Image (cartoon, rainbow, N blue to C red):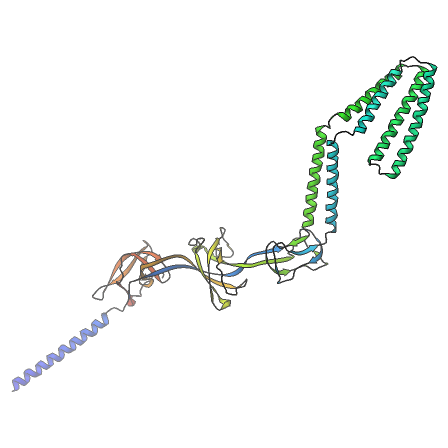
Length: 458
């Protein structure tokens, strides 16, 4: 019995010792097992965004000012008023400008009248007078060589007296006509021509009497010939066409007068401020009756029919942007109201104010019912790239070798251990990266938290 009892005691001691050893091994194994965080590879969509902040701005805004100083005569708009394109907003006193326009019109009329006179055919009455003067001069010359008799002398004296009487009558008629008509009128000019003809006839008659009494001499004959030549030259001048140089000079005068009129009309237009587009008058900085200052905005007009958003994007991200990319916008002032739009314009020149280099990006807004106003702050998220239904891995499970740009992940084995494998990445976002090669949907990756972990973006 004692031998059996001894065997049982020894067996109990062995079992207890073995159990203690097993417990110690389990505790040691538990202490040595790594603290692993895992994730299952799945499929999904990835969207790469560029975020920026900016402000809502009206589609157009213009500062209108007068080109020259002047007294403000009228203000036909009020601040906050909606006006139409072409509507008059303000006007300066235009007395001087209107006078300049009228003077320019008068100068143009004179220039055109001068050209018409040059281009008009000669007046038949002037031709008749000139032809009569030629005949009279020729008759006077021929009379120098005809036989002189007392009867001829008496006849010449009688003709002279008649010519003097006719001259006096023509002179009186010219004076009477001058009292009734202006000096540039046709009746006055005709009376003046008749007076000249009568004077000429009287002088010819006097010379004939003198020649008959004295007989012809060399100087008288020469004078008679000169008179014939002068009369013919006057007649030829009336029949000859006007020299082209005079026509050209008259045409140039008309062109100059038209240009002066255009300039005067343009100056008249500049005393009026009109709305270049439909919009709201946001500011009026002039007063009626006061002097307007050149170059200082008098009225500010804003087009509120459409709005856009201007943001500034860091030079690191500007290369990702393209015109037409969709944009999601949030307006804080409207309780986080969501708007949509697209990239409309990207500045070509950077703004290097301070130490940060940025580019201005304009975004066109889609139609919205939100009560947006100019100046409201907006947060913009620009979608620069998007992939759908791709294998993706959380970024915290990816290690990137900065020297080779090779990405790695730890694949979780069936035994719970980790094996590092290389993978090829596609699109990278803030949370996930697209896996092109190296992992499949359903794979499990992990990181040893005791080793500090790693991340693509750390």
